[in-house]
Image: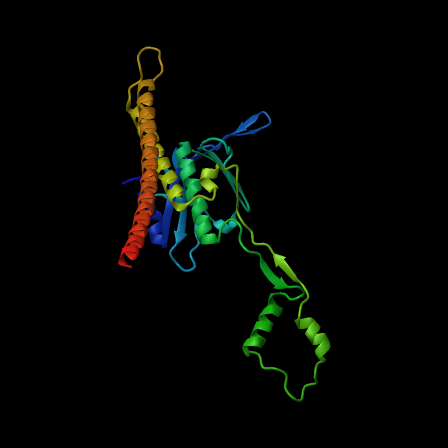
Length: 305
């Protein structure tokens, strides 16, 4: 059982949530002046996973959870959890190339992470962006407008009067002038409260651009292949014994894995090109068939007369 399925089964399913993606991360080194700060591991070695999940209740809520697994301890421990409404910014660090670093800025904290590979970081941001558009109304939500001079209590009272839940004034009560009341209940302007949205900055266009669902799926498949071969390469290098003489360990295996990744990427791209050509040929054949049918119909009408 992989780590992702194990986390989903033991952490999120019992809480009524569905995990969308989980990536292994580490704290990134930060330079402050001449000092280098790094998270200490006083409690022993552990693995940190950053998970994205959605609740099964209605309306669904998108959550980001930090899960840890300490060495020698089988169960996973949930450390922190944030709602996407608390996420202010997602910083991809470099918009021009794949890199494993990214930042998450929340209302009360800033987390600087580095994934085990750039492909896993791209998978996390791509799924986070698509889920944010699906469950939060997109990166640009509509503003919430309320009449000027009327708070929440006043707005609820007006809604109750309209619905008939609060009885109107009785005949014995003194009448109220129509002019001022009309001016009070008919606001001249509206104060718009813009919805708080999450910013995705320094991210590659293929992760947060306006891509078609087919393109997003294809990019996700490519990144999953890259992440799989990167993990496989690391396992091979970890099991390989250290060389006795001086040299570059893992150079031969690394070259083989890079060739395999390149071949898979090229084959996926070629398959997409073949599908595009097949669609173009199908449209061309349909056009020719329509022309042939029109010509046959005209000839039949001509000779029938």
